[in-house]
Length: 384
Ligand SMILES: Nc1ncnc2c1ncn2[C@@H]1O[C@H](COP(=O)(O)OP(=O)(O)OP(=O)(O)O)[C@@H](O)[C@H]1O
Ligand SMILES: [Mg+2]
Image (tube, rainbow, N blue to C red; front, side, top):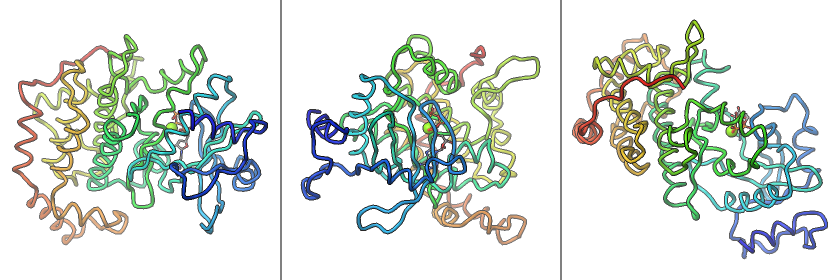
């Protein structure tokens, strides 16, 4: 921690330190300190055309830059809103922690800049944007998420979360698992973003309220009602995210007449009837592995149990999802771009049929037993 502060002070103009981070060999962190000039140059001085989006903490800009021996690469720069001195120190510690966290399913932190009023965080740019863009946004009509990709994204984001809960040091509770915080790289691999930054919100700041409102559909009841945070809050949000990936329904839906219905209330009657097919995103046109769909829905319901003690750990979830993924054909399908696939073609239909056939049914039965143990689907709850 002390080291973190020392390094932090090093990079604040007038902080008393050397502006260079010393020797590559001693480095136990992976981020770089950027100069404001470098970032301004990369983002065309935060030009509006470079703006990717806006969230609770500030705006995100696309940029292109080079650093060290790496020739040129794309970055996403989060330009934070102004913060208090206390929040600044928290920011430093967060950056230090996040800079050490490396996992294939977590968005890599490339570096940061802090000086004057500017607090800039530099990430790898994710060319396939976020899940929200594909499920409900600009890319939804392109139908790039076929079932194998969805399965892969569910497993990948579960693995990222499992790493945060069990392997990261200190352990990290994300607190804001949602579709806009799962980004997709060139190969549609999931990268969980914004872990740890929930702590950056200073108490009493208005956007804390906005933020909570904005992600209401994902909040575990004990967190929403009593502010109780634990890793099982992330498990709850992850369950909601699973249902959202499967169905492309929003976590909270406004019904005609102004009533709100959450995704669990929507899915429950189908599960009670044993009708799993209508739960699948209609844009997949029924082209999904029916057993996998059923099992992922059951896992999601287990994750969203209203009692946190009944929820599984992310270890269990990863085990269940990876058991479902153990099919040869799913792997083959995953490496293919769905845009190149012509599903109406007989050959493609055959391929889908055959991958249903090689599904690992033994592992399904095992999951079903664990997931279903003594459990009836939760009764519809009042809209929050
Ligand atoms: N590294 C990145 N590559 C590509 N797009 C990104 C990257 N980081 C963020 N984005 C996109 O920029 C937009 C704004 O992100 P941001 O994290 O600021 O807001 P948010 O996720 O909508 O809300 P929150 O502030 O609660 O995280 C989102 O659409 C997000 O998917
Ligand atoms: Mg985000």
